[in-house]
Length: 184
Ligand code: IMP
Ligand code: MG
Image (cartoon, rainbow, N blue to C red; front, side, top):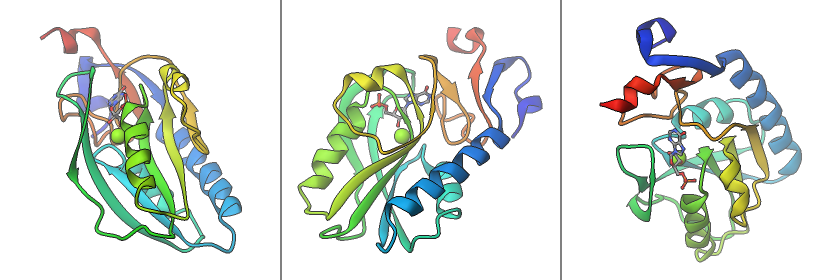
């Protein structure tokens, strides 16, 4: 899927695939430096983090395993419900592992702070977070995010894993939708 497929539903491209790719190179280098001599368990948060996980994991040289969790915090619209539920749990025992949570975006941070306390109770050696995008509200919650791609304005974005009601996850860039898309 690309910008042409979107027609008048695309308002603007916020981050091109080249910008995303270059940023992932930087993030992978920072991760390799941080975890030198260790092994990492990458935990991708489904569904949004699939693209970041796939691309970031291939740029990391540190030995790593990959696992996935699915949690629900958003309905089909653009507002957080504030309620987090585990839809799919890890298949891995994370005791004594260096866990790196891989996220597409941190908005209110509700999902992540819940996830961190849940994972912390399982006795990992460490937990850090890598997120491609972060919105301004995220600074209000007390979460230390070790690896951030881009701080973006408080707009609803789609693409590169992020959806609006299930659509647009497979866009190779991050963009905003025209307002008429939300109107109906
Ligand atoms: P938070 O709990 O508010 O930090 O956000 C949790 C989840 O909401 C993220 O992992 C995304 O899946 C989704 N989300 C937040 N902001 C956006 C957005 O702008 N576009 C698409 N999904 C979003
Ligand atoms: Mg997510």
